[in-house]
Image 1 (cartoon, rainbow, N blue to C red):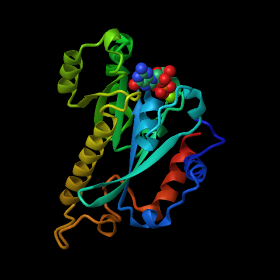
Image 2: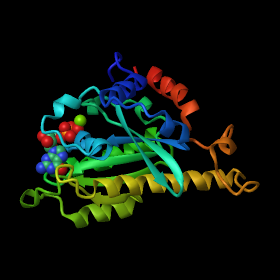
Image 3: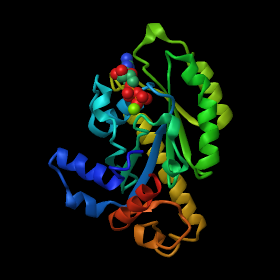
Image 4: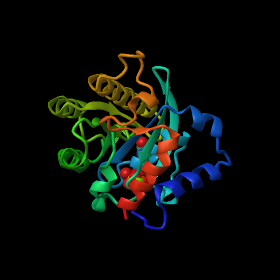
Length: 242
Ligand SMILES: Nc1nc2c(ncn2[C@@H]2O[C@H](COP(=O)(O)OP(=O)(O)O)[C@@H](O)[C@H]2O)c(=O)[nH]1
Ligand SMILES: [Mg+2]
């Protein structure tokens, strides 16, 4: 990862780039969920992320190299959730355990036109099992679904693998935008479900019937909480990633 640019700066730059620092929205955020995007080089990870975060597809992917994460805020079950989605930024071969730290979800991407990228998916799952939290939610994504004539990975092979490994599965096209939104939203919904369940298991929400930010403080629930804790968490992450 680029030591010159930690997560905090990446986000500032992104928001300043859009000349938009929306403090109102910031204040309302209930949870920040860290999600990592992994998979072989050139499968479309950066483009999937751009499609979800900015609804953009950039033919010159190089222009996004160096940005370590992008964010998008969505509402799920009346909770305002900021998805903080990390990109390998061209460092697929050098992903360290710091990249996975605190991640609640993973998008594991392969290219439906490159059999090898699918054959490597098992290795990426092992990597996740070794370095990420055991309750991490994993979405297997077959990208470039628009290239129908060049398909080398049958959908059934991926469905079978996903069922075997307990992963969610979707085929997407970052180019057309097909299924990108639904794949991310499904992942975030599942994370929300896991987090809410963990909170209940911790005996929370009984008194007030809710799993709000305040009630989660000081518990073992492994999430990044609202904006006031977000910066320190990001500093922690960035200081570990260099
Ligand atoms: N046809 C098609 N090309 C894509 C799609 N997603 C990415 N690409 C192209 O695949 C190449 C690699 O994409 P990139 O996002 O940089 O891959 P990364 O290395 O996994 O981040 C680029 O030339 C993209 O334009 C897609 O859904 N359809
Ligand atoms: Mg990339």
